[in-house]
Length: 316
Figure 1: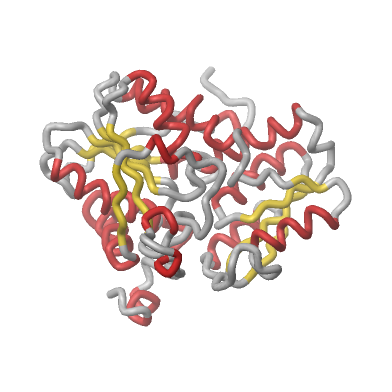
Figure 2: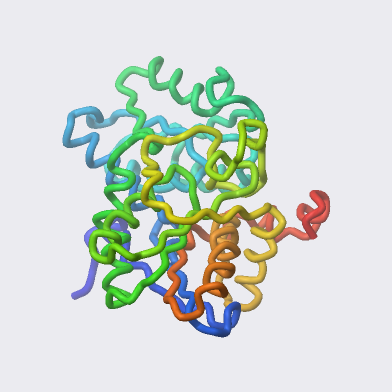
């Protein structure tokens, strides 16, 4: 029988879908990472980071995991923690959707909410609060997706090979949203080892450090789960060949178009990635372009898919 022993065993092997209605030339395909059991691509790294901690003795039975997260990594960690008997404290910025906080609590996690508009080293930031809780709680372990090598390794060992096999090695361009940098780094490294001419495009929200020309250009933005205001250790800059900056307005408009035209209910980071990928696919009509869609739109029903919320922010 084709039966998994547990839900964690169902992580991965997400499908590729051609976005031929949104982009009629047909050379743009999307990898639907939101079909992982926890609802996002972060399931992959959550499992990898916990297993690495277990192997090294950093996480003991019944221990506490503390992680700053935009929500998706927290859900992946909470899912694995529930199976293995760990407690999770997810530390989140207040710009993250209510659905994400409620979802984490549904998995049994404790959620700590911190202000968004503060510097990373401010004691109130979600990075600083996570550090403090890790120090204060006996037996606590912080995976730290921003520096943990298990983050890019999960995409090197899983997501990259899946894309290679699914496209029969015919992929020409990989388009990935930039956040911790683990996704783009792991996938790119694997795929470029097999196809050195592969072109990698990193898509970034307007206001993020990856595409900022100066420190003054690093500002807050509404798109969740992507972009940064510091340089993560999990990002390998030499692997990205081109950058595309996308505004909140374009990200959310494309997100809604995905559901209306393609029947794909995705999150804002997926809309951002597709907005960048559409530019690339139009400029390179002979190339097969693969764009990664990180998470589901069910986490954003009160925001991106809510006309009042969009209108109040001048986005509709």
